Image (cartoon, rainbow, N blue to C red):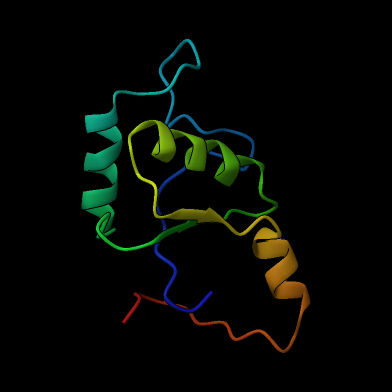
Length: 96
């Protein structure tokens, strides 16, 4: 999706280990914020979360809300929904 920034997830499409402790609880908010900072995510802007199908993004959206970020939303169709509509633009590489 144009302008999207990869905000981490895990080692596969079925994990969220970058956001969870070993016991599957939410990581410390400062650790998550550091991930986003390293990715170049500006938390002062609207944060819209998406993943392949929506479930991982919904969990990270919940974490963002727990951390006090209110200017957030979920693109629940995810990449699957976006890419199945050929009228939607796509781009590769680093966001501009």
